[in-house]
Amino acid sequence: MADKIDTGVVAHDEKANRFEMSVAGETALLTYRILNGSIIFDHTEVPPAIEGQGFASKLTEAALEFARSKHLRVVPLCPFVAGYVRKHSEYQDLLAPATLKRLLES
Image (tube, rainbow, N blue to C red):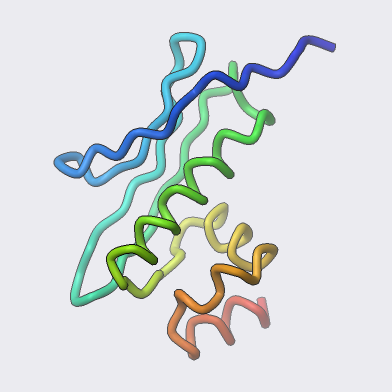
């Protein structure tokens, strides 16, 4: 089994509304929109060449920390982000109560 690549640094491209990491010539990203005090995470994409190495989790953690620092409510439309928040209770306070209830019931 090859060693995991772990050299990427999360960058926030506010003009493009995305968090991104470039690793081994590939770019992983998480896109969002900000609307009415909420940040809507709508898509996470990791190229096949770097899948399974935790980059989506790193992007999601950085994005959630950004949301916390800006006092934004999180709307996790992206299935990966929703699953991450479901597994990491330390970020569940960022969701509106009704959104959290739906997330935990699904």
